[in-house]
Image: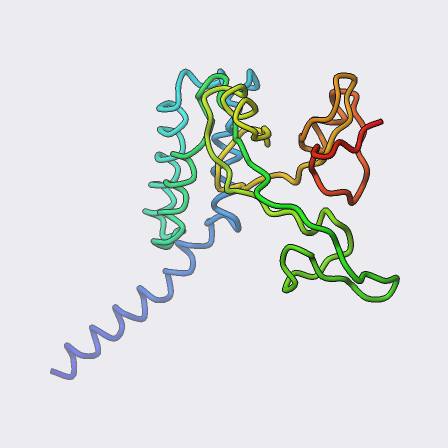
Length: 205
């Protein structure tokens, strides 16, 4: 009996000693590793770089399963990777992430040394009116028009898990439009730093 017990303990110790070595090759950030190996833009040709969404998903699932077999992923991370890759624009030509401004407010009581509080939620501290903005969750739209025609703004491409980029009230030649700061700049528009992202009333001259 002692011999059997000793054999079991030796075997267990051996397994424990090699387990860290088996995990030594795990990437520090599995999600970033998969994103780099399966970029949403495919081969650099926009969302059309993948033949379709299924092709992108196949790449992600293949790598996720490899990492899972190597013991690099816990159950929570596995589920998150599957959920976020499925709810993405990757491989869907023309698809975008869409967000909505659900509320704006003014920053009240801010000074040079202390933050203020938002007029629309006194529990939120702020430095500018922009800090009082509330946004919807990011959603998928097949085309940009499906977003903007319903009062939303395009926040880019990728997974809904990335959330919404902060919007600005962008002054363009044709008037005011709520856009991301990057899109505003790319279209030759201007915006006021710290201002609430609303065009009602329009901040544009």
